[in-house]
Length: 217
Image (tube, rainbow, N blue to C red):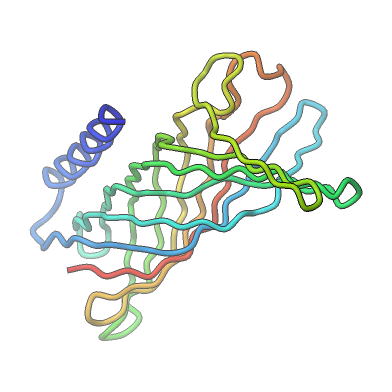
């Protein structure tokens, strides 16, 4: 865990340092966003059938720097605690399997801001992320019976999910007067989360809708 936190902090400081070397004169701001996540899993099978799990409900907390590259373009490296997962239900069997994971993510978003008036900006952006699973749980429900077990992370046969994920964020929102903002983000996971030996067909990836409120200063 300590190594993961140090690596994530290194990514964050590296992104901020890179942004500072490329930015035009302006004021770097710091911000915090919190909100709800609606995560699920996407499965891509070799037979062309691409099912998705049902969404679960989780949360996120993200700290970030807002570094100007020009009057309209900004780079936002951050450090984010992200709740992800998904669930599969069977009405016929009256069963449900739900996965919940908590991950430490490092997003680096490139954002364009356009004035909506004297007190508001519309922003649109995208950028890569990498995240590291900190903990996870699988809950199995059959009728009135419920069992829980911790997930095992790794890349070997017998593990449940890979620990490292990477993908792309697409975000949009509105900055309001006084430093407040509201926004939405779609996280498109690109890493196959299945460990080695866990079948040879298909690909399991994260999909996460996020909605947040934030403040920058």
